[in-house]
Image (cartoon, rainbow, N blue to C red; front, side):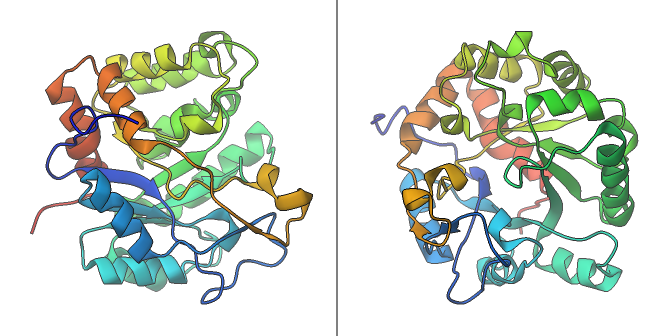
Length: 295
């Protein structure tokens, strides 16, 4: 457990990737691959208060598909202090629906290939991204991508021309097979960051703790793209299919235990004690990304 000093956050801190879950009130999509237990806004706010976080970005969990009702309800309860990233079908959703989401704080859509085990080819993936970008460009929303590091090679040429911010989840989710700098997608990922053509979430590294030289990879990201990184806890830390009780996806799954104060302390250490950089990843960068202006 980190000390209170090493885990202390700057005023106005953001947590840029969290979820809310309540299957009783809002049913999951048909045949979800796992069933996370309830984790409501009140639970989230208690967790964030313990850290000193003042603002959150709620991301629609994959088990809800494109049903954003719980997320939107939570944003309304936050009364402008939070932001959201939704799941949508760009071919089906209306501009009116998007405008209503924008009014309560939505600022992005999520394209999730990892949790849904999709493996689209280059042409199909880029065509999908163009559809999303065309739908949200007028609102200046972001496309948030949960893909593997190797997938970035497929989309690197497309991303700069989409005309919307692009956010990569969980530091690009490198594979555990070798050091990130030797993996497919690494060079393209770093080049996009250097050119400020993508954003990245410093989050979720507890999902892949066996990646060699993971801490050095995180340090490098912070060094080359200090204005493009936002910090996130990934609360409440679902386990996905791999943690289904007895392999049964119909059984309610508990959450993983993650020491977030220790993660905060590590992130601050990777910033080299640079208070300006620490403020960027916790406060300044998320305010820009999520279009937040203090009332």
